Amino acid sequence: MSQSDLAPHKGPATSPSQVLKLIKEARASRSVPNLIGMYLIGIDLRGADLAEVNLVGAKLSGGRLAGADLHNANLSRCFMMKLDLVKANLNGSNLGGSNLSGADMSGAFLVRAYMIKADLSDARLDGADMSGAILTGAILTGARLNRARLKWADLRDADLRRADLTEADLSEANLGGTRLLRSQLSQFDNRPLDLSRALITDDLPSDPALPNNPPAPVVSVNQESTTRPAMRILNPQEPPPEVSQEALLQANFLIGSQPDQTLQPAQPSLEQLADLLEQLEHSRQRVKELEELSARRVRDQAARMEHLARDRDTKIEEVQQLQTQNSALSERVAALENEREHLTERVKALERLLAKKEEAQFTTLAVQVQELQSTPANGSSRRKGREQRHIAIEAKLNDANEMLDDLESQVMIALGDPVRMRGLNTQIEQVKRFIRGLETELDEN
Image (cartoon, rainbow, N blue to C red; front, side):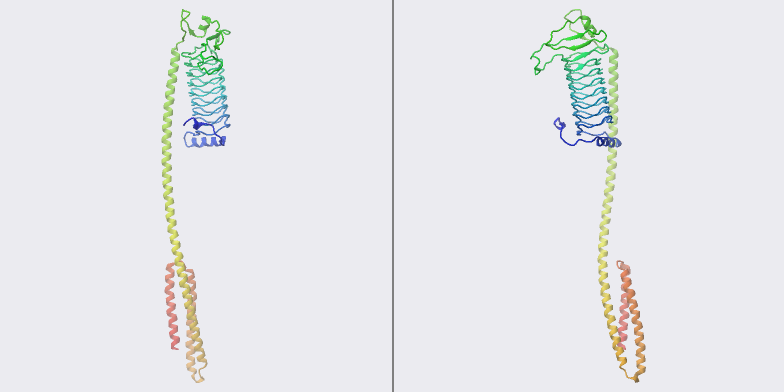
């Protein structure tokens, strides 16, 4: 990710409730909360739990995070100008390459924080605990570090020009190659300062207040207090004051018997070396714990992904089965619709046939009745026989009508049932035969 990718941009800022919801969801799934590159300009997260959150490249300028818990958080290459971090917990956090210019970090906890090449120019770090912090190459020009705790801090090649380090604890701090022009320093608790390879000249010719080759400034010891001697870097344009050997000895520098002998810094004690070894062992244990945690999270994530993949395959199979069943049901419905139409046509044809037969039978009976009425009186016996046959035929016709009505009702009920329709077809054939028998009998009469 390049620096241009992390440049501030215009856009809607994420609300605090959204941020806290994302963090809660990530922790519920036992994964690292990921807020990489988020636009959080001016956000108010005072006192929020942001421990171990990944905020690489996030835009937090002007925000309010006072009292927030950011220990072990990844805040590298973030934009945090004028951010309120008063008394925030940043122990073990990664602030490498971040822009914290003008930020208020008074009373903040930055123990073993990683701040390589961080921009802390004009930042307020009064009373901040930066013990063991890595500030290699950091920019602290104009920063306020009054009473700041910088024990064991690594300030190699850091830029502390014009910084205020009044009463700051720099015991066992490494200031190799550090720029200290115009900085205000006073020693804390009579402990030695590591100024090996310290750069106390301003070698940047771009400063208009200095000539191209300024003379080297000198260290001046303020003897106003014998219990807490102060050291400051004088302007190279000012004349060097008188410095006695007693004052230099009070500043914990070793000086030889010859007046022109080079000053040598105090050597670390066995206790200091033991403390450093203890810190190193603690760091190794911390790295091992982080590696185990990372491996466990990777395994958990892989198991969750495998479980989700199995669930997805099961759901896909269920959907495919439902689609197959739906297709089969659609085909069945279409077949039943076709069969219903076919049966409807047959019923209509049967109704027309029965109507024609009934009409023909009544016409024949009417003719027979007329013939009987026109028969002479001497043929009474014959008339009686015809009347009896007429009554029998009428009874049969009534039976045929009842059978026809019953058949129609059964046909309407059996629509869509192929088995019953086959039975009805058999009955229809029986009715047809019965009707043909009546026709034959009428013809004989």
